[in-house]
Image (cartoon, rainbow, N blue to C red; front, top):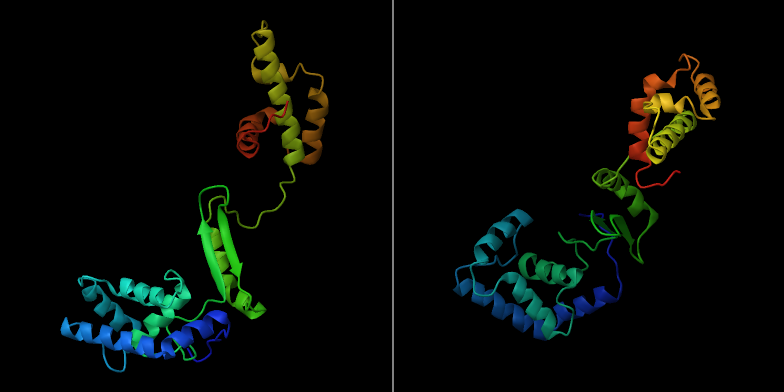
Length: 242
């Protein structure tokens, strides 16, 4: 924790003033005394680590007023937002670890806040840059950002352009035209979709394009029709091509 950068902003001075005040000292003495009477003793020098504190906290939740509510009440008495995470953390660090805001704490002020949303119109990973955020803060978090990005709906890794897309789209468009014409005209010839495709004006040019782009194939795209239509039905879902 020795390399934690403290942010000396307005919130820092507000909460520091609160923790130094006689009013807070009186509240602190009263709160710690009540914990002692209830046999939930807080060490005079504070808990040694967060695990020790968490163990105490589990038991203290049985009290009529939870430690979290106690902290909110303290902030309210100083007309500070009881839901402000930084304020809450500073009071917690002082009450239970005997740490002041300018000292190393288990609750350092965050330089960047990451929020993931997997629903709604604003879904994605939101990176909140603070007024005091530095470039190295972002660089340090880049690994975490990438890992969180992988958990997002619709995440895709590095992808190369599908070089056969133009060719496949030409086949797909011809397929859609054949399917449409068969539906509109009732298909009196009882032709299959592939056979109907072969009767359309663009059939020869599409066939040549298929052969030109992939010289390893014999130019008969019907063998690949199922995979092409399946792939583009998914890629172009919701798009009215015709």
